[in-house]
Amino acid sequence: MLSLLASHAAPSQIQTPLLAVFLPAGTNGAPLSCPAALAPLDAALHGALGRTLQRRDFRGGRDETFVLAGADEGAQRVVLVGLGKAPGTRAQWRRAGAVAARVAAKLGCGGIAAWAQDAEAAQVEGLVVGLSLGAWTYPDLRTPAPATERREPVTSATVLIADSEAARAAFAFGEALAAGYAIARRLGMMPGNVCTPDTFVETAQGLAERHGLGVTVLGRAEMAAEGMGSFLCVAQGTPEEPRLVAVEYRGGAADAPPIVLVGKGLCFDTGGISIKPAPDMEWMKFDMSGAGGVMGAMETIARLKWPVNVVGIVGATTNMPSGTAVKPGDVVRASNGKTIEIINTDAEGRLVLADLLVFAKRYKPAVVLDAATLTGAIVFALGHNAVGLFGPDAALVDEVRAAGEQSGEPGWPLPVWDEYREQIKSDVADLRNTGGRPAGSITAALFLQEFVDGYPWVHLDVAGTAYSQSDLGWVPKGPTGTPVGTFVEFVRGRVR
Ligand code: BES
Ligand code: MN
Ligand code: ZN
Image (cartoon, rainbow, N blue to C red; front, side):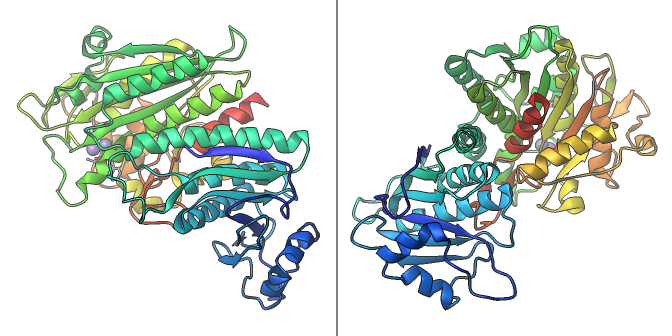
């Protein structure tokens, strides 16, 4: 992971291979003016910075970059990074930070310094997270290029912040959030034969060792004893031991009801007997992104030592076709006693989550948020731009929406009207596990709701947003880290 440092050094004084300077777009096409605090840097560059702005070679547009050669002393290079339209929100700074780090990665210069001494606390938070997102790589499974050809990966970032308590706290928050994102993205990027259900056990044990969290692990036998026939029918076709992993962070009062975060952890989803078509199936290694998001958020929350109780629960397994696999028409019984007719074995995420949501109740939660790459239909509804939000409590859904917006993970609500429940009624059982094509994301949410009992709840469908099949410029192709930011921001809102 990127090593992050905070410094109060002046931008003209810092020794760095690359100094990043972030500027918002001007108005009415007028040239940008050089911020007063950068006058000494401009002088060291013999006025190159001021001339670049004057000539409008750089206009501060979103994702815009311009690299200048540096002077003999101080910064060896300077990159101007556009923030886009003022005011420069946390999400804008996050994105610009990621763009800057990706420039550093392309140049192969190893390290970067980022100027944020005039930035507000929220902007510093965004920047620190963004630098880490942009510098992130997953090199584990690749043979390194020969040293002569290799571009140095970005291993360190120095953030030039103001000498204030607010700036230091913002830096610390950003660093903790970045660590959470790194865990989620790493788990997401790991192929299905590397990230197995036991990887979630190991990740939880790592959290326990670093931060003293409590860990509970259930395997096949323990889940059978709990009557989790819904989760277990998904795991029926795989020899891999399925895992229910719960991690408990206790920072609040002993009797304070916890926030419970629940994640779908399908280490791979073939569809099972209702097998998926081959094209693009490899992307189904990301079907554990909800669970990865839970693990990432737990890391951040534990690092920040917030005075709150938070429990993370993930259900990890692999959906496989085999002679022992569950098949269409089978009826299974979940741990709350409800029976489910399996119509399509590819609607497995809701089957795993059903037993997790019943399990969550034992923590007497203040609120439960679940995140899952649950439906392809959410991509038809909201594209790759928004998380689908579902729940009967509109105020709570809006609280999650606001947390997502704050963290640069926008979400949008869809209705969970009773009328849609008709679609998941079964001829033989209490429920069926699919509701047909119409409103597929909504019927999935309504299915989950059948297992929510007596606590406030919101479901996040992250199937369109947890990973990207194309390079987004500021985040490379692959895992985005969503929903770590939303989870953390929601918990932060409850701590305040
Ligand atoms: N993991 C998939 C959903 C998914 C699809 C995530 C595309 C990311 C991209 C889920 O388990 C699934 O297969 N859902 C089915 C449900 C259907 C059978 C009712 C779907 O969306 O097609
Ligand atoms: Mn599926
Ligand atoms: Zn799935």
